[in-house]
Image 1 (tube, rainbow, N blue to C red):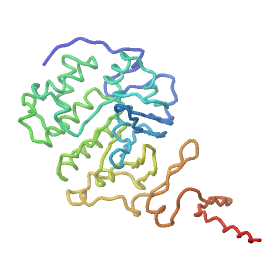
Image 2: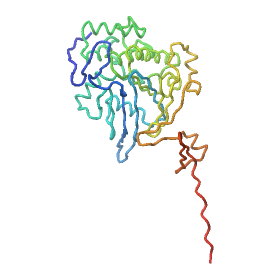
Image 3: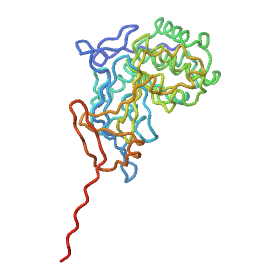
Image 4: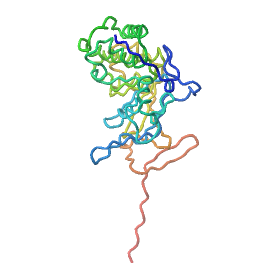
Length: 336
């Protein structure tokens, strides 16, 4: 195991103690841990501008697991890249664990990524260094977080025991199965005890049984350390395991599906997990109204009612109603 020396940066990570995620002294911990407000991201490709986010709002509480779903191009990965510090928005504000990631200097951004967030990609090849052993891969984020020596060895042993891969310290990624590689990838992402875990399609290349194991491990880490988790996924079964499912459409939050009962995914077998769904019996589906009053109606409702362009709004004492707008026909003028 490599022996590096590095010290945490106190101005970025005011409080780092073993077993605890980064926290800021004197801050309001009842506020959302993650708060995105009117995020806009525009990419320039040659002479074209591609709008990936169009005023996205999102709040996530500490210790919550949120799944993000949406069609390709809806802004899911762009949102994760901004939260992780890999990218910056064109406009808007994004606060994670009391740090405004839109205002960090390059040096602060690097330290933020070392201490505050962990990231898991879909492809294990992006998560693990092929020429490093399992122990060396786990040692990288620990070294970056100034955890070395006996503390690092103890943490590596603890992580491998927790993911069911004790004794694989000297193996290389190529000697592991795809599911085992992803378990190690998850351990690497949480090794430094981040406040937030970001996962981009972490089960996308796995079968249903292995996907269940990965989600159960994510939940295990979440519950042990009050970890806040955002998972991007196309798998409804994976999304059904989250506390809340946020659907993106055209770069904005359109709907949220909220779990009614506490998660008990550890009781699910492979078949039950594969059949898990976002049903009315277990979840409430809600339309999101953003901070300026915009909302997106589900496509099936828009198409079924023939809503296009303008609508009539009827306001009652405790609710509002939207009605398709049908202008009254204009009287024909008499020809003299």
